[in-house]
Image (tube, rainbow, N blue to C red; front, side, top):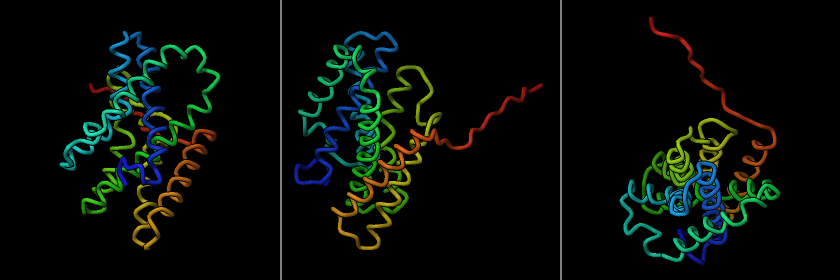
Length: 211
């Protein structure tokens, strides 16, 4: 179901890459980057996770190279963000929902790609998580900050849960479309509840000084 107009996640995928491109542009703006920097960060954030996944799985040609319209979409979304950024604080809640949709959709797409290639369970889960979170990690690293996935509400954990649920339902023989719908709804609900409730994993803090 990867990047096909016949799939249940195609529309969500387009929304996801657009939202992630906008989040990348905002991150670049907080670091006072020029327009080229904004475009690069937007591209990396939106399409970086899928690119890394394809390289790791040996899946060639890489998805976006066969669909240049996706490149135009994410770069346009990033540049548009520079124009409307001053109004986006009013859209914060909507943007969080779109970002959450992107996380869940990317996780499902990544899992399905590895599943279709016949990889074992752990690789399928890692494929989904790589697709879901690596774009954001690249964004934060390039913007010289600790990645959000390691320090705020449940994020990578949501990706892991979505991948696990998707595989579990697949093992039970649940229809793919129904599986996708249930996994997407459950993952989105979990992510939004984590944002609302401020749910976090336990934090490890080590302050010992070596003598």
